[in-house]
Image (tube, rainbow, N blue to C red; front, side):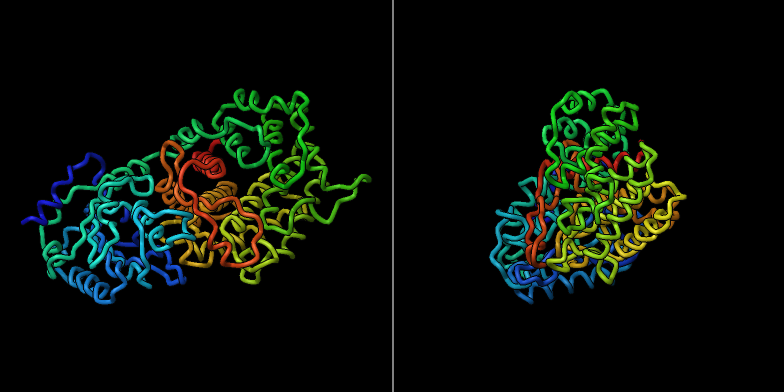
Length: 513
């Protein structure tokens, strides 16, 4: 049969014959749903998946409605239901269906071009979701497929690998014919094999991979490269980091002109703790002291917070670390004063954080910054300080709220409570770190660990050994509408911010201090 020959022309690949998607299923013989993305009008695009049992099987994905026709959607849904009704012994593959892939019948381009996901949102949604889930075969039932089958089969998809695909349009019964073949011999796809390899990395291995590409420069002394430097410290590269930051110890003055620079001083605080060198502590203390006036009185909050939820991270961990290193409780008092001030500005009634008072949008990093910032600050607080229990309660309540929005891949999305927005990588790593820190320090019980493990898998799936990432939100100042947060570009490729945050997550998972 010609179609079978087309399927089997793809070479069998070595590697672990284990369906990546099975990691996301709650149990065998169950159906689950993913939020793939959305159309230009905001219509949600979903995928439904069925895992036969715990046996290792290839995954086939059916796409319908790519041309916008309801008939196409109905056809793949019917085939999906027929497959689910078969005896389990006659279900050789795990099956996923995206029945209404292009709800408004938009003109698509594959691979997609422009700013993800503002431009061509349907194409970006499908392309990156398919790449980061690695099915072994994609069948597209559509009169027009916009060259998706050709692009999947012959291009590296979302930086992951090739996905064999067929566009079915010549014969009315092609889809049923293929689904009735003996698909248990279907080879795994290149994307599947790559994702298997990514998932096999240990936290220490992943941290070491990222350390080769990030944390080698501090010419811009802000938190973005700073977190990678701290991640490298935690892996033992202390002398290397000391050399990189030596210009500031030797007299190069830092203009503390933004909260990003304030947060960058956490690098010096971490070095002070590890080395006992007072020169590092003096640099960190200079930044923390900006929270006091000339007479030593506390300001209402750390300066340059910009009314943004970022400020939980940009100031609080540094101030608390300086308090620990100096033994002066006034720094812990300042940290709590700062947090209480921010709570009034950006805490929503539902427990999420708006990025700023300009709009209620719960931006991804606008929630990850508070989660991570409070976790790092709590790590430094003495338990007998009056603010310790208060801070722990705020931290735990926020994480409990965030857990309601973690998707089945373990990810948090660009707008936390907006399902069609893209799964954002840096915030997932930051929130994962915050939860893992809470478990290791005893602030959270073991029931939180599955959420960490799901986040860890989600991060590994979207990160190459070379530090190439999928879906990192671009640098974002406060915006004045939900739409502007939804239209922030989702970067794909190397990224210093993600490199640092993911390295920190990896070292936290590896329990490196």
